[in-house]
Image 1 (tube, rainbow, N blue to C red):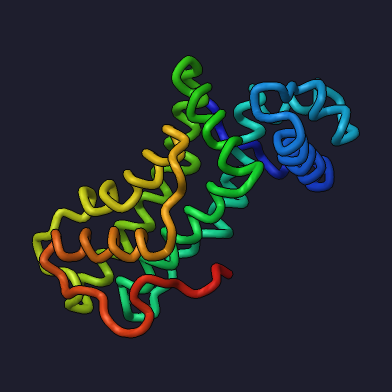
Image 2: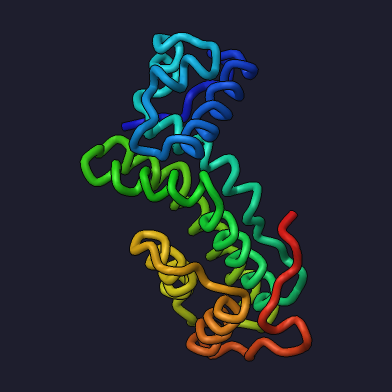
Length: 208
C-alpha cells in the first residue's frame, strides 16, 4: 500500500521541484510518456531520491494532482448549500478541463486498474477525504434545515460527482455552469430539499 511520504524525511524544495516537474512534463508530453527519469532530470534530483519518497510515477502524479485539486475545490459554508455545491463542482470541472490536470488524473485512473497500491492511494489520499468533505457539507445543510433528515447523503455525493467522472473518463465535453446548476438542483430535489433560487442559479463565484 502506498503511504504519504513523510515531510520530515525529505527536502521541501526537492519535493516541490519534483511535483512541479511532474506537472510540467505531463502538460508537455502527456501522462503516458512521462517517466520517473524525466521527472528526476527536470527537477534536478536523482531517481533514487524519487523512489525513496514515492514508489511509482503514479504516486508522484497523485500527490501533485491532489495538492492542486484540494486547493481549487473548497467546500465553503455560506449558508446556501446549493450555491456552495455549485461552486465546488464548477471548480472541479474547470480544473479537470485544464491541462495538465484532466489528462493527468485520467492517466492515474487508468494506471490504478493494474496497480493495486496506486488504487489504494487514490482512495485514501484523494477520493475518501473529498467524499467525507462533501458528505459533511450536506450534513451541515441538514442541521440548517436545507436537507431533510433521513436523506441518503452518500448517494447524493455519488450523484454529484458521477457526471463529472463520466465526462472525464469518456472524454466527453465538460459541463458548463448551467449544467452544473441543473445537476445540483436535481440532486437536492431528489433528497427532498428546497430548490436553488435567486440570480445566482446556474452560476458560481470564482474559486479561491
